[in-house]
Amino acid sequence: MQEAILELKDIAMYFPGIKALDGVRFACRTGEVHALIGENGAGKSTLVKVMTGVYRPTAGEIVLDGKSVSFSSPLEARKAGIAVIHQETSMFGDLSVAENIFMGHAPRRSLIKGLRLSPIDWKTMREESAALLSRLGLKVDPRTLVKDLSTAERHLVEIAKALSMEARVLIMDEPTSALSIHETEELFALVKRLRDEGVAIVFISHKFEELFEIADYYTVLRDGKYIGEGSMKNAKENELVKMMVGRSVDQLFPKVEAEIGEVALRAEGLSQTGIFKDISFEVRKGEILGFFGLVGAGRSEVMRALIGVDPLDGGTVSMDGRAVRFSSPGAAMAKGIVYVPEDRQKQGAILAMSIAENITLPQIDALSDRGWLNPKKEAAVAADYAQRLEVKAAGLGYDVQTLSGGNQQKVVLAKWLASDPRVLILDEPTKGIDVATKSAVHGIVSQLAAKGLAVVMISSELPEIMGMADRVAVMHEGTVSAVIDRKDFSEERIMRAAMGSPAEAGGAA
Image 1 (cartoon, rainbow, N blue to C red):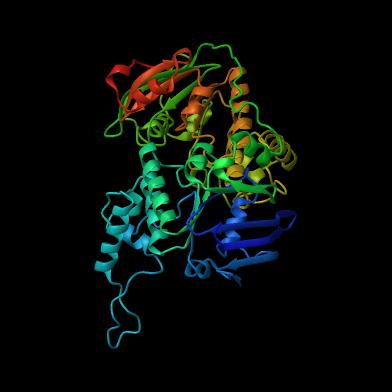
Image 2 (cartoon, rainbow, N blue to C red; image 1 turned 180 degrees about the horizontal axis):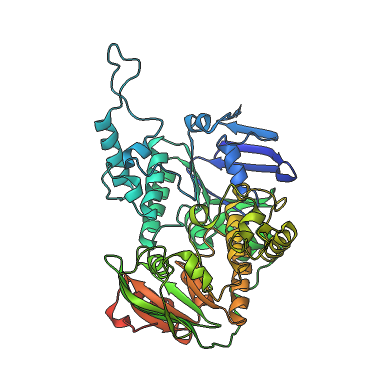
């Protein structure tokens, strides 16, 4: 085994009321893809922030190239060759792709006499950006504004940004969460090339199939502590799960058989010019209707238009046999339809507000007496649903931004479940959530359906759709290409429909 390029020894990180890391050790080597594994709240994000200079550890030592170092800022870490690609992209939407890639380290022309600062060499910056984008297989003009890119394209630009800094240690935090199957394959090919070039790669993912495909080595954390490490080729999934959660997760998809009732929501001929057309489906009380498709198929766009976020150009929506049209999400909520968005940080939660405030936000009126919010009622509701979703936090008064990504997602789910909806639309509900929490979320959704709630579940994970849905509506390029009953589920049939195979064409859901 090669000598470690970056090593963390007995790292401890304390916050008020929380021991986030306790005696953690971790080492990554050149030419190796090292998987960092653990539940949400296990300490992975905190450890990454220690590696990249966001946090200074309370105790322990960081060793780079055999020498003890201390990063006072992320900039120092980047200059030392440590770059990170975050799960949630943080880019400047009104700047170009090239400007985002070279933010803070733009190439400059030779100093012009009389000028204190060297001007940016725009030509070189665009050329180097184009070369990086080509290397990633992304056909985007470097002058394109980032706000005009898809989520998947933004993630690839984030990767290009890290590569532009010639990182020797590249940390990838859930890099495939917004990528299609093809884009993921291209990313893995790139990761393998970087590994073979001698880059040390730290890979964080909750998808075991990805870890077994791409990783050479692993380290497991649980509750902020080091649990174990080893070669990925000798690891077994059930053993890794036990190390992660301290117990066996026997059933990832604990589906409860439910009595399917009358139609709760029906959509007919929904259209939005250039995005989707002639979308028809119905979801019944007690049913989980899956929506599956490749990235860009239009699943989320259909639901956003249905609840009034975006305009509909045609089609009708009815509930209980009566036509309805929602001008805003608030109007949909008033009818008992709630939408849990995919992007929890920008659309699902208010990060600077407390956990309790986020959970109870949709119910302010119901929790108020004569116009004044009742703190006891608010605390009771927040505590109840935080406990149900197993939100890990030092207290419900802490801001949501202090939580791990998975716990932020739990807060978003708790917020909408607490509103007692009639129709629950879940957009990628387990994105970025660890295996144990996935099982818990699936159990809650299944129990809600068993009690008569109508659920629409949008997911890019085929096992999740097959494990949870009673029926699946498969979308391809803005149309419903097939509707398949649970008894007829097969991976091949669903994927063929998602790729637009005429043989799998179906009718209305």
